[in-house]
Amino acid sequence: MAGKQGRQWRSMCKSLVLGILLTSCMILLYCLSTPQVHFSLPEVPVPYSCAHRPSQLHTKPTTNNSQQTAGQACTPKVDIMFLKTHKTASSTFLNILFRFGEKHQLKFAFPDSRNDFFYPSIFQRSQVKDYRPGMCFNIISNHMRFNAPEVAKLLPMDTSYITILRDPAELFESSFHYFGRLVPFTWKIPGDYKLTEFLRDPNYYFDPEGFNSFYLKNLLFFDFGHDNTLELDDPRVEEGIKLIIDQFQLVMLVEYFEESLILLKNALCWEMDDLLFFKLNARKGSTVSKLTPELRARALEWNAIDWRLYQHFNQTFWKKVDAYGHRRMAKDVAELRRRNTEMAAICIEGGHAVEAGSIQETAMQPWQPIGEKSIMGYNLKKNVDKAYQKLCRKMLMPELQYLTELGVNLWITKLWGHVRDIINW
Image 1 (cartoon, one colour):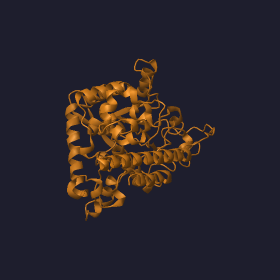
Image 2 (cartoon, rainbow, N blue to C red):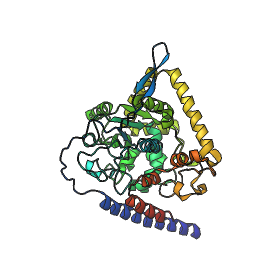
Image 3 (spheres, rainbow, N blue to C red):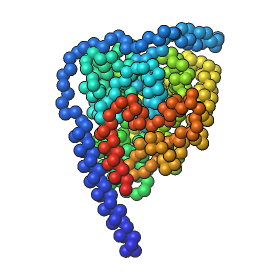
């Protein structure tokens, strides 16, 4: 009995020490990384387009009412704003964008010293690495809290605005697992099943003013730059959704990722080769909490704004699929899956993702949440054909390593990584 009590006390003391250390380090990092002054930048208009016009046009298939496919010449669109929302397979799509940008020698607007634009502060142009008014950027794609006027002053007028959404109940489960330890009010939730206990009475635990609380309520709406604590019947909710509708030309869905990529290919006149991907930052199944129908209903009620947002874009998504043609979509998705399967056989040792402890190269280790190693990764196949070596490595490369390779200085992110490793003792 005494031994059990001793272990409980040691666990409590360890949690207290780690909590104090974590809070102190996060406050320090916040002070180091958050810009305290926003300088008034001169208004220098960017060009209509920053595109490098290819010498050859692509043939874009089009479908008429009789489902016959015809060819139409088009130019690939390369000026892109991708709002990288949280826990939405956005790292997988970011890898696609990085490879596309390198292929066409495009200029990225990157953050400085970390892998996001000082999130959760609202985006400002001054947060872009080496920014000067009037500069020409093709792509911006790192995590930010969206600020349409500032983005518009950074990117050319012909920019395509794209983002991705996820079923809010599944997103909430993922966010609670990944960020929960970074939200201090969760530390007081008793028991081993904290998500279940939280959803039993979220208003009891939730502190809207609490540090990092935005991760656990209407995170999508927050990422779009809006107030995530509004009541659903507040007029500002519909106003915010209307703004998102007007600002983004394509809203992809995680649940239909491959269909989303085909719609993107059609909208931007890309090639099938541009869409190849491996699923990055996936969690091992044993760490995923299976939501009962009751818990799912509670999660959707708690994230009601995100649910309203998702429902709207789920409807518009399928209208786009209808316009594209269901038979044509099924054919193209099958082709994309076939190509991805071929690349997995060429690139991946064993043909599938492995747990963090089984990843052989440090350079292939993905970023892990505090307290556990639940994010899976890959081992690059030995003796890959020279024709595929570079592509395979890029397709398998985790986000932070790819950013470093593209020239981004991530000293704050790396410092936080060292702190995280100490906390995980």
